[in-house]
Length: 304
Length: 322
Picture 1 (cartoon, rainbow over the protein chains, first blue to last red):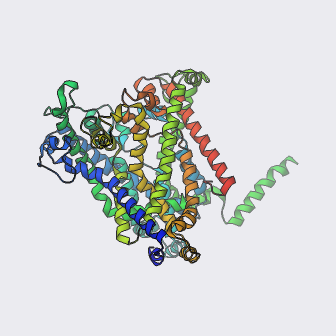
Picture 2 (picture 1 turned 90 degrees about the horizontal axis):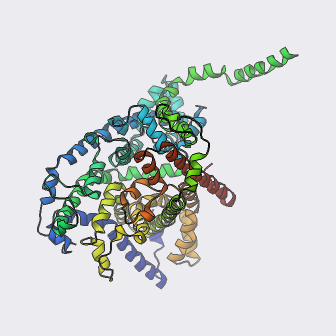
Picture 3 (picture 1 turned 180 degrees about the vertical axis):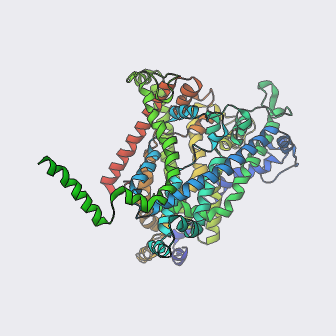
């Protein structure tokens, strides 16, 4: 991919300027993208006073674990963590169980109704009933304040269905199915024994899309759930990061105007720690799966 | 006469069916029942959780009745639409929604293109990969955490960005509590989070450019900048159009979660949008019919924009969604 460009490396003055501008803008982009995340990490383990007076910017200073101690002692975070983990794992399993077979069926060219069915699915991407009918439906189904609300309504993501279907269309030639059916395989066997093993890249991409979707889901908890014991991590995060709710240890709350900057500093350190603790799992998964991710987006782009 | 006309079509249908080698639905299900089994759960979930709410949209034209549930009570026609059009909030909501979504659309549309063109120029596989990985990373951070980061970075007393701004003479600015700063903060943080991820699709398009075009341009004496300008940019146009159409369908769809989380009494004048208003009116104030009507209005406008954009693109460039 870099071949043609390398071959074209020029030495005209214009190209030198170009290279200089390129290097500078790349550096700037890199700094802007990474530094905020890096800063959160170093600020979470540095002395809060150092951070708030601007003395921490390259490396952590006066290491302090105060924030993390507070976080580990706080039951709300771990309760939210446990709930989210449950919803993410069970939810993603259901997502894949529903999405993959459907995508396979819709990818079979000989399956005539697939055009109508694709329209049935795709239409929901552009038109929806909106918030209130959804709320009333979930109320009628007894899903309000029920942990299944985190799993059932989001069982199929049409965008993911389309990506998986495109992958099956692209990677399973018709001959393969013909050969398999001559050997006596029916659709179930063909799907389980041939299609699924060949589709591990797309399975990981779609699986991770769904996993991240569950992990970051804030809306469901906000609108459809009142019972705090089943609330996911993102709701707990909102209370700590944005609503400034106090920690069990008393620290963390902004505490109104009178509390002053001392409480604010500790509140900020807890916030930095909470950001690290809640975001780390997703960020750590991601480099391993990056190449699959790109593949997923590209297949989506080709067919979408 | 009547008997003959009644029989003929049936006979034709049977003949056509025989030519295809089957006898209609029965034969179809015998052959494809397994595919139907595989697609059935997805159909069921979408039918229940997407189409039943659409059916429930009739609530916008009815009086909400607690006992009647999703389909509502007596018909009231366009009462709730009139109520919305005549409400003092109407123009504020429309203006806020359009301003936020159009600025996000314009800036959020241009940034990934620039980024892709830039990354594509970087020589060396590993350097490119590193740059890509670094710019994708923020995409996976949750909206709650993004807004939490904005709060600590933009804190008037100790925030990193506030202190950086102070170097340029802006002392103690309260970016999160100001009407003027709301849209820029929203848009810039959105670009920060998604530009890298959204550039993937353009990088894919750039990787399909025929290398001979680069050679030809080089032989014609083009410098690197004019190669980018005259080879790379035109190669991205079809992708741009498709994404632009898709984005047009979201002109009145602002991200509810992020705006909701960034709202505070100081910026509410510019940050109250249709989506947050529907939530407050419907879920918090229980005016179900009124909120459904506002939501339906929003959906219809978006749908109209999508259709218009698609038609225009079809006329102008032969690229369209359908």
